[in-house]
Image 1: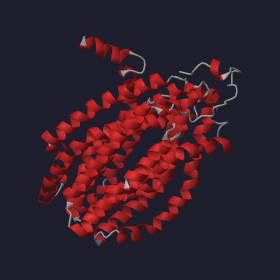
Image 2 (image 1 turned 180 degrees about the vertical axis):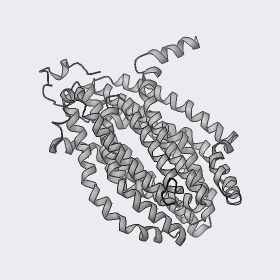
Image 3 (image 1 turned 135 degrees about the horizontal axis):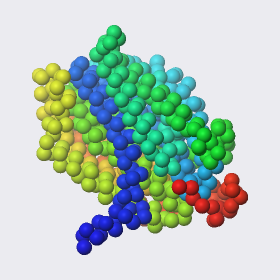
Length: 478
């Protein structure tokens, strides 16, 4: 009976097999990015504890800068999915290029922020040595910030249609390029000077522009030109750009609020000392091995929800979400158990090239922090899956409002506790764990409420498609 139930769950439309088929290339894609960052931090740990500790706050500040435009540009994925489901592939190329324009508009802004980096890290209260490394890392990776936005929009052409093999190819090759450049530029191999944390930053920037070049080359293949109007769509469309800002704007602001809170949390932890910041960085680095690949499952769910809503099938969209949740929960449970039972397994790479005396202190603290990670990572699965589902429908304002209300709470509490009550690292992590658990339950409740079932982001009164068919008669493109 159990076997029959599992077989039905696996084979039914929008069941386990369909979600897995769509999600697996994205899990590999996001996983490769995780491995790249993991190796990046590991190499920096081999150079010095300070270098590794500096990379996370600087990287988080950089990502904070990217959040709003990246959230807008990558929301193209939902437009592509709903246009595909509604039988309007001729609108897809135009939608993708609206996201690309977001990245192009932001490049001068990103470059203008670079000179402010030393001042930003100085007022954070970090030591002079740490602040100097953070500034160097931030300033260099900012040269690839625009590329990250553009690549996010271009990748949506593939993810929104469920054609994720190409995203996997670009992500894996980009990660391999980054790791290779890390080795050469951090340690000074093959005639290059030893650049340390600056080399890690240059490797990241170069790999971002590689992603842009690879996606542009892949998109302009002849087989997609007629159906999706890739070249014809390379223009600004005021109405569609406005819709992208209307739905993608809250998505970007939500990302900005969440990452701002997380970045401020790291800045506060930095006040507790080098060892506390290094252990926190290492714990997050280890958890990224579990968390980041699940973002691929989230993208797959968002795509499937958007496609099924475009076809007028909200029940299938709900089924895809629950199928994805089971996959995410099983995956996260395995990692949660591993963080508690065999934490040193995840620290072997960092230990290999680090100073033994320095690493011993960081290791003992990291093992404790991984228990907190184990406690909240299942709630992270709820967060990823249900945010992806309601976001795929267009319910981005609820996600934004939730983050506006809840994200400041742990930051303000941690600041007050550290400043006035003498709180240490454990108290900060208790707050972080409670915050993650609360968000997971809130998004589960929103999904169960069901308002997302009637939402759409594409135009409700679409004209005839390219074949002269009405919207109700159009055949979805597979």
